[in-house]
Length: 132
View 1 (spheres, one colour):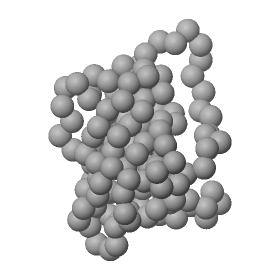
View 2 (cartoon, rainbow, N blue to C red; view 1 turned 180 degrees about the horizontal axis):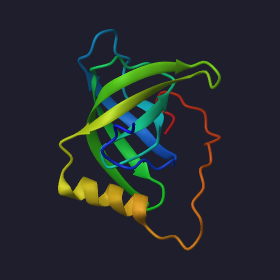
View 3 (tube, rainbow, N blue to C red; view 1 turned 45 degrees about the horizontal axis):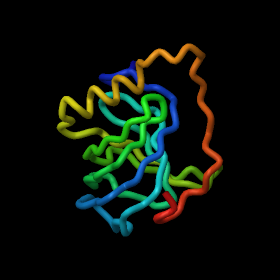
View 4 (cartoon, helix red, strand yellow; view 1 turned 45 degrees about the vertical axis):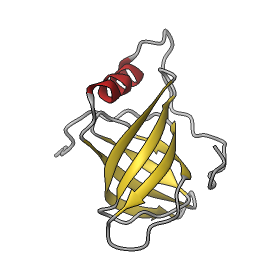
C-alpha cells in the first residue's frame, strides 16, 4: 500500500544543504553539496557524502533541472541509510511549510512539458563540501 501523499519523479537536481539542526546524533558541518532524487511536492530523497540523523531540520537550496529555477526549502529528515553500493548516504526529507512560490517552482519543474521524454541520468559529479 502506497503511503505517499504526492507523486514522486525520478529526476536528479543539484542541492546544497545550507544548515541543519536537531535530531539524534551528530550533524555534519554545512554547507554540503548533495543531489535530490525522487522529488515531489512533499519532499525528496537526498544523496550526500555526509550522514544526517532522523529528526534533523535542514535548509536546502535546490537547483531545479527542468525549469532552471532555484528554491530554498526547509525539511525534516524522516529516514536515513548508507548506500554501500554507491558509497553514499541517502535520506528522506519531508518539506515543511513551503510557500506558494516554492510550490509553484517545484510544480513547474515536475510537470513542465519539454517536447522530449524525460529520463533519469545519474550525475557524474563527485560530491564534496563547497564544490558547487
